[in-house]
Length: 212
Image (cartoon, rainbow, N blue to C red):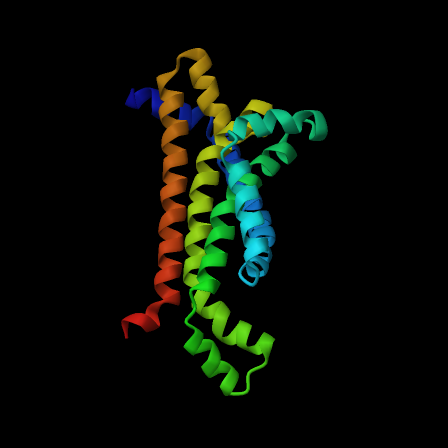
């Protein structure tokens, strides 16, 4: 088995590298779009119970729909390739970021906000200098969760020609090639663990003041 793994990586190194980079690009794009959507919506939801309820219920409902089902629904509208895969993964990534953004802003103690206001801070100054820094660790936790889920689910992009490590995995399934399954699965696992470690280190750096 070790020989088969080495032979594949040696003879298909360019294809493997392309699959890894494509997987990362699709995942990063989906998470970035999810952040741009979920964080502003989460900020809006933190100031209104009605908005919060609607947003969390709506995106939580979308989240329980299997990503593969969303992919197939997107095909008639968006065709095949990277675009429908990105849409499906973005829908998957939004709920944890949205929910954590809402909770992080709602859990800031009123005394802290009143103190900031008493110091003469305006609404936007208080938000950027007090609320957002305090909420950032929990928001990053949501982004961390979303990123790991997206990297793991991005293998489905291969079903509709989106590329990525899923192509290696599905090829291995079709040809009964255990070496391809191990390479594809292990690569996804390594990417997920690497992303988790990266976000952990960022969170440790941001919250370093708490350990002083």
